[in-house]
Image 1 (tube, rainbow, N blue to C red):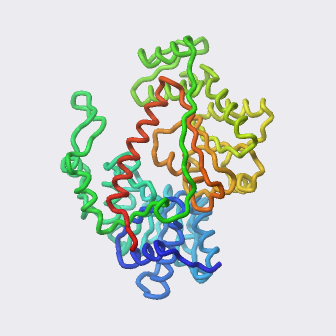
Image 2: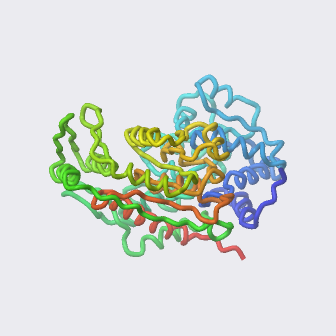
Image 3: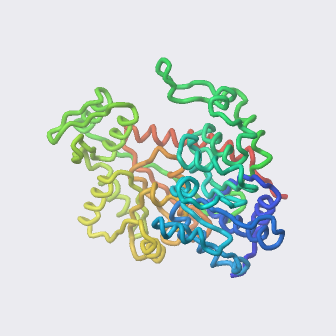
Length: 453
């Protein structure tokens, strides 16, 4: 197929080629992969600025998106690539292949750097989903920083650069410029731009930006960063979000409040405890969904309010395809049981064949877990409505999952996002927290937004 880039794509391609270090913050549907590949092809075969490229990406993006894009476009037909996934022997064979672009999943980056025994002789690296490197203590971050000085060019790509606030940017931009703009040490970054927020004595749980810190951070990274919103440049459908609120009865509410108040809830089938705030959050989220894991691993049902709401939503759609997002294993089991009872065909989306069957309209309902299906999947041809049975804390996973439907190529004029929210529970706090994080991320994107003439 002939590649006819839009103006924004031409701009992004040129930006990568003229900036040895670049952060490309593009939303879903912009064609980040084709942009990066075109720039790589130009620098390999026209300007001869590079000779060997490493791409680090989520596993599904490695095995599907990058190979598919290379095979799709005529101008990339001479680009030799190798996908290094699978067993150790398969990865070694792929990394020794006669290729120019080597694609590896992010989980195997530490292995490549520290255990493979192969020389790290790449002169360019693309970090697809730069946000995967936001944790400066992670193995992948530390492994990458060991070899970062060997690279002449680094490109970071993501649509969610600061899903948990501006603190994420430290590690991400250190991967790019080795600390030139935001510093080399997380402690100094905190001291310069943040003040303690929530704390318990000497224990600090969160930080908030100092007055003027956001503008200064954006100013520092602006010379290597471009950002574009899909709604600015693409013919996008309308995104409509709504809440379907359910209410617990008195007995169900008492169980929920007891867990919240005492961190301990005695049940007929066992005992559930929450040792700390993070654990409590998970327990309360489970209870809001309708079931909770006991200490022995068994599942205790609390209510069916969300299942009843889901049944109402399915009935109201009159057979239109629904994508249902769940989080816990017992969510999946209980939803599946209800769908079987209603004689509604469905599948769990976790294989390429499931993606094809969803997009071809074979299933009226598909179940999706955000952590395993957030990145790199094109699901816009199968439907235009997503229902959040369980709402995750992670803005990145939330946004990426919604953007599987809300993207270029969506045939419906409207994409509907429905949140099933249990009134008076942690569900409301999660929705509010996601909104707050999105405000921070939107400020970042707007601060470095590209306005094309």
